[in-house]
Image (cartoon, rainbow, N blue to C red; front, top):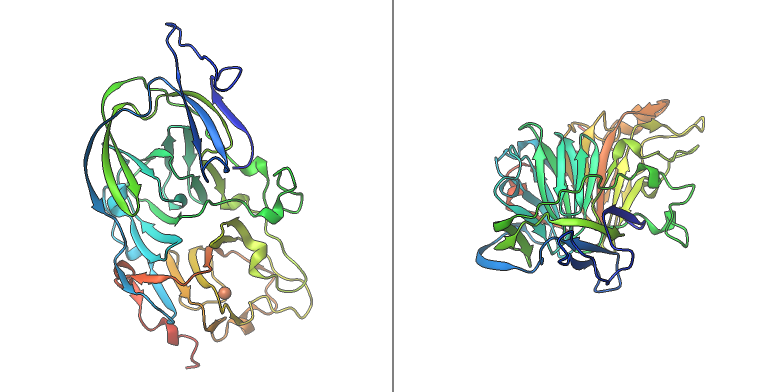
Length: 386
Ligand SMILES: [Fe+2]
């Protein structure tokens, strides 16, 4: 997040002697992205963070692709993804390309015997069902329904869930995920016309500092493989840090919709951006107020981007037969638009309760085998008049 945050204790000057009460040194680590050009944090460990004991093995976590080149629209019934006890095993990639994996997960248990770190990607977790605590080496964040959790690459984390019914929509991005640049001023501050501001961003508030030695398993994702690395020191042994690179939470319910007299295009819903895709939040809002406005969108050709919509709650005005947890894929190359009757239905309506998350990718997405198991194979014909 492009604003400064500090938690725990840090020395007056960076890269200087920082002593423990017993006179020995804390160990500094610079935690950054994009080499030394991106956002970074300086943190201070009880023990050296480099004490690898053993590399126990690895397994391939690359998604199994069913359709590499796709021009067919799909609807996927996300809640048909089977719950699984373990967080990592519960994650099912449904759409993928070289920039991003779009994943559904229904974990039933908190992460127990291991820590997890994704060194390939930033992870954006959207909490559809469930609540709990994201625990990281940079502090903790509480989460509940409607929260986005942005976890920068390299963050070591665990998820503690309050109960066993959890549904997550996860975007794994090989490019860093930022707030939209057009909403930030020269100094990085979110501007007045941004649909959210720094006050809506929740930063880690609770630093766990554990100075244990022993065997600590970190499952590290790198190049699509999960490596089981055993470290000699507890991964949460940071006594303090400061900088710009840390996980944060933002609730979709804190997104302030931008409305107008006539239909506003999808970019007004934009919440996050990368070089390879955007993420938008469609939130409950008042409809367009021109006396002859058509609130439903017009058909549109997303000729060079794939559109993924994840339906969260409320009636989705432009679609027939869509339920919470469904995903629609409208691929690049062909137009899509409201279902039959949706335009007429929308005229005269004054507000919508729809809640959805949209991911538009600039490269085509591949459909995975896991996605095909929950696919509605006839969705592409659902615009035909019956
Ligand atoms: Fe669209």
